[in-house]
Image (tube, rainbow, N blue to C red; front, side):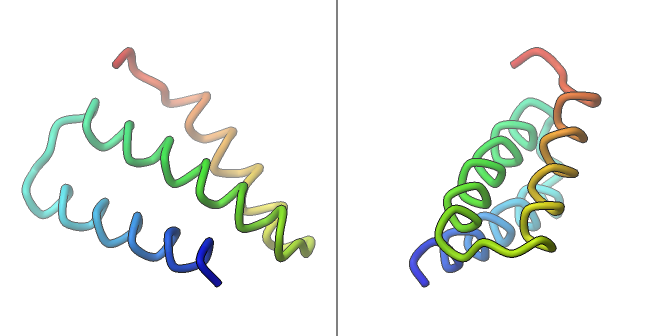
Length: 68
């Protein structure tokens, strides 16, 4: 459950950054952290839907990456 909590906290931070009009580099750093947290969660919880969500997030970050 610790991994799930980290994912939810990361999502909250991302929403806060969006409301504060944070720059792309700051948002991207949090999104990369979200990917790491989600991967840890999937390793413990498993499941096809979770695996797919992590894959989509990873692909999106790779496609839309900006230098940090």
